[in-house]
Length: 252
Image (cartoon, rainbow, N blue to C red; front, side):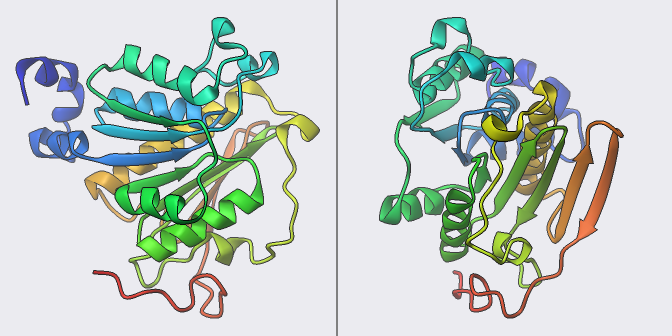
């Protein structure tokens, strides 16, 4: 770590849970973020700011005027641009030492497995159940921790699923019905800061995972009510009959 990094990350390095060793670990970490919208915006900005060495970001959509109300990684000049490219530009201006691999298409099949397998942690910042289920299955197959977030209206939730923890549930343990249809922000509306609250918590939890600070949200779902300003923790046991994770691979 050179002098510039020591100065930039000095406030984190002071923390006993981080230190110079932990900061070096973050600089060598690779994180995959699926979705560069309301959740992915604060996730990417805070992880890049914290010194993550490599971010792989994916989004096939383009920036729309209506996105600017909450998707803080984009700006007025980005309207019409691919979200992946817009986000990459912002991240690189924020921290040029963070290597950004921007994919402007939806990851599927073998490429999804490959990218999940390369990552030290995956962040689900999508807005639909099919993508979430596919990402959950890829993380189980590759043994990669998954930090999941969702936000709509005035509420949101965060949870962590670690396939290598034999007692930890997966996303399908939380939502067993793959036929369920997700409500979207376009349909239901969303207050702007709620995605920032949830996305920031996802980023924090990803750092917990990378730094191995403790159990964090493994086996728990944290739910936030933005009107009542209330957090609730729901314990989520693993479903031993879960069709997605009941028979997990033997990880190396």
